Structure formats: structure tokens, C-alpha cells
Image 1: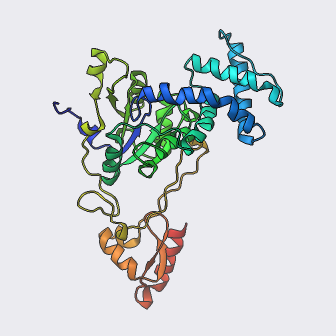
Image 2 (image 1 turned 90 degrees about the horizontal axis):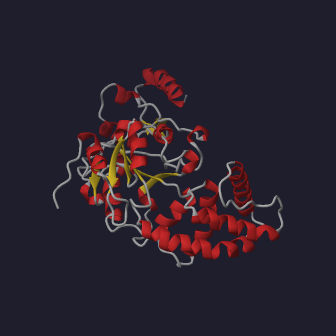
Length: 354
């Protein structure tokens, strides 16, 4: 197969956001495995977990969605009575069946599906499908200094279940964060702007991988680099689509240059763990970006500002005794200067602590 021509911006992207259905995972798996399992087991799940807070919350969300659908005069909508008793379970099930028959992607439906799928994943009934190239690509991308995120209409919980219990093993170790429709619709440019702001990078340093042209256009409007996936079973791409976007058939068509780490990297792009101290990075996508707390990087030490290499500073830090702020805001140790410089060192500690 001929090599795919990739732009310099695509090749130098530091963060990669992946869609799921049709990109990392086959559409047939979603349609033929996940959806039938949810339909078959939703009533049992509701009866066994009716008193759980998670169930009460999702049922209320389904009820509110049904009310909105009724006001919008959607044909066939199934209302859910304003009661807490188990007698309304048949109405909830019918509402779910109706939404799924319409291939709707409402947040309440996706949340309930995720709750139902959890049992299937955990007891081994379901194994998450990912294409053969996915695990290797995730591994190479992260080893080369890139961060990988997931953005899907499926709930964050459902995403994590799929990648944790995949046919290729637990892939969560390669993923930095997850986003679902709480951040916004996938066909709205504002959603991508919010994600870029949340992960604190420039839009031009982000690559979005998807199979849906409308999503690709929204991401492009937001300033992201975009590549379309042409997987088996995906919707046909027009000639106009192929002219506007780069199209690949597999993740192996993407070959990135190494992204340098601020605290040093090895020759093949892997982090030198013994030369940097990093705080564990949390998955930021549990709430919309506006509600998330951003942890700012700590200031560089005085030695770095004065021109010393990160590697030299790291060696000195390992032998030191006085705590100052490291690059990631954690405490490291620094040997004190001569006695007459002690006051200046203490003042620097106070500044760094701020």
C-alpha cells in the first residue's frame, strides 16, 4: 500500500484525541454486541439495582429527557412516570428500547448502557473490540512522548470498560484522559475548544482521529489537525471529503517524530524516569472543563533559569538536602550554597512555594 502523505503539523502533534466507534473499535461490535447486550439485560439491571443511587440518578435523567422529547413532539417518545416505585421499570425499559431504535446518543441513555455493560465486561461475557493496530500504536505514541485521549459519545465509564477489558488486554495505561458528551456534542466546534483548553495545549498541537466527517469538520473549525479513518464497515467517504482531509486505513499509517520532554528524554523518546520527578496525572474528563481544577506546573529552579542543563540540575538535586519546587511542582532537594548565600536560598524557597 502506498505511503500516506502527512502534513508537518500532523506529524508534530503532541496530543492525540481518538474517537471510538469506527476509529479504535468496529461499528459492528457496537451494533452487534454491545447494543443487544444492553437491550437484553437492562430490565434485570434495573430490578437488581433499583435502590442504588446511580440507578435513581440515571432514571431521573431519562425521565427529564423524555419530558424534553415530549415537548419537542418527537414521534413515539415513551414518557416515564414521576414515581420511585419499581412499577415504572417497564416504562423505563420501553423508553430505552425506543431511544436505541432511533440510534439516539443522549447522555442519560449512554450512562445507563454503561452501567449495564459493566457486568458483562467484568464477568467476561463481553470483551472490548479494538482493531489489531490499536495497542501497538498506543504504545508507540506514548513511548514517543505523546498523550492519548478518548472522546466518544459513549460515557466515560463505558469507554474505560471497553479499553480495560479489551481483546488486547488492559489499554488504560496508555490513555491520559477521557471525554464524553458532558463536554459537548461531537459535531460542535466548541466541544473541541473546551477539550483543548482542558488539556492545556495549543489546538495546532492536537490531532483528532475520527471516521465521521461532521466531527472532523467541527474539530478543524476549532483549529485541530484532523485525520479520517477508513475502517471496514465505516460510511463511504466522498471525493470532497478526501480532498479536505487526510484519510488513512490504519493507525500504522501514522508515524510521528519524537516529542522532546522538558526534563529530558532517552534516544527513542522514552522518559528518563531517574532524571525527572512527575506528579501522577489524573484523568481530567470526569466533569466539564469549567468545573475542573488545573494544576499549574511549578517554576523552574534558579539553576535552570541561569542556563544549567536539566540533566545537571537533576544530578545536583539527587545529592541535595534543601527542598525547592521542581518542574512539576513537587518538592525536590537542593544542596545549600555557601553560608553567605543562605538567606537568598531561603527567599527563593518562599517564592517557589508560592
